[in-house]
Length: 139
Image (cartoon, rainbow, N blue to C red):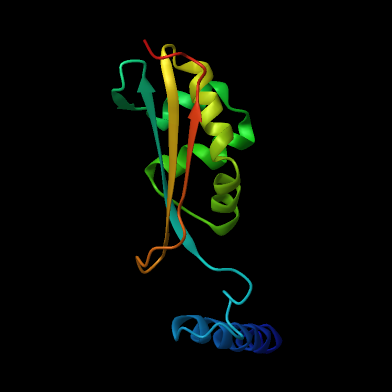
């Protein structure tokens, strides 16, 4: 048995135990979640056709038009993503996603983008929506 290594490992486990127990117990102060709020989200995109009908746009349909970093943030959100930073980026870019849908969906009159946000326990958080007109006139 390597006594110094075992003591160092025991000290490390004890140091991590306090914040883990605080997080499990729901405390913010002193826990690993002290500076962040864990949440999950779901991104939905629909397009409105010139005749007023709505159709869902699969998030994967956006992939060829996104950069590498945007794909890593936007694509998982269609299935439901977890992460405060990614969700914050999405919330600030709903109009941009709507403009992209307008650019790649021929005949669209408008794009509607919705971001539903939830705490990990299911309680809802402030969600966001954007409606972007595509510039196609209705007939």
